[in-house]
Image (tube, rainbow, N blue to C red; front, side, top):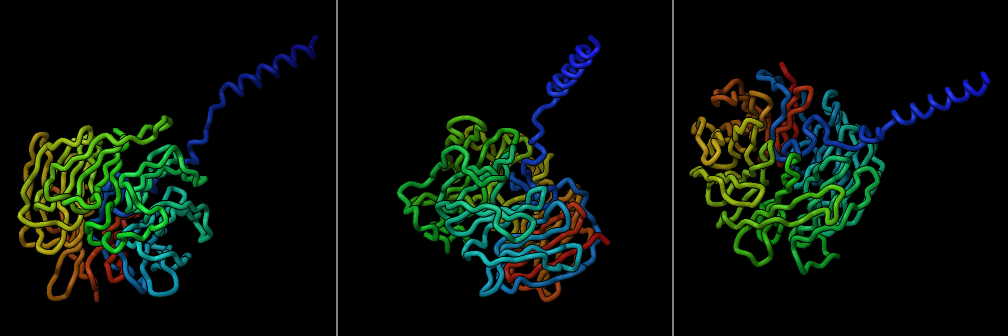
Length: 427
């Protein structure tokens, strides 16, 4: 009798234990690193981080990739830094230790031509990056984790949640990958028809300058709260580029649906679209020298603001709707507040020419500015009013800036088109 009671009690404990166990796989699902995971910071292209930016910095190290860069540095969960170099020989994809004077951890040679795309770090410091005709993943070492053929050159990849990876190629193929195994989820969506699937380099030379032969020249913006994907698309033969809204349906068939196309910006769009934090609005620079805001639900225009100059880079957007307009030759440092059905200019600095997108880190902003006659400087400014907090010359800087990345450790990394990187520590 006692044995039967003990056996029953043991069985009850086992059943209770099993009933209390759920699926705990979610902790291994890849998500974007909490540093500056890729170009423009996050999947929304916001160029914003909640990390409290340092107003005082010191230049710790600088070094060159011995080639060119077309995108900013990706910063991982810890101290790793990755760049996609376009080098005449040797390594091109490089991973360095940001907290160790840029010491190289590993590097490898890739097929060149896609320098406008940056690597993407997940929270485990795995890397995701494309080359013409292929998407690849690397573990924290240089050995390839998985690779899959695609049509075109993948732009900077984005995480969709649940370990799913969004890839949009320069030829308009849209794919979702299982980031762990590299399997394609659902059916890819083709935004451009009639392309030769074996010619993944078609129009690639136009991408860096966002010209007509490159249908998708910038990374998509993904809004997690609405699961909308916004893509800038220049259809072959069209007069100008448009915006396309795609709805992501996780776990459903079809996985992706094309919801709308907007040609409201008649002169076309330039640089990457940027999603608001609530996913309801997308902001984009028009080639007509205006900043535009459109509803992500239907692509209809909310408002537009004349800028009197043409930014070459996307704006940065904070969760409270503070927009700092993009940079480029002849631009000014301007902040705009989204007020719903219109926008108000918060402040304007006509004495400053930002050459990069501004990166917002809490209440502090960073931008690379023209600083004649010495060349380029990293400007630190107050987001609230544009007031200069500090300015740091970048010795022997050449080319133009391609990104300002802000890490979890508050280090700031600037990259230039001439392949130079400058790493600043909080002072």
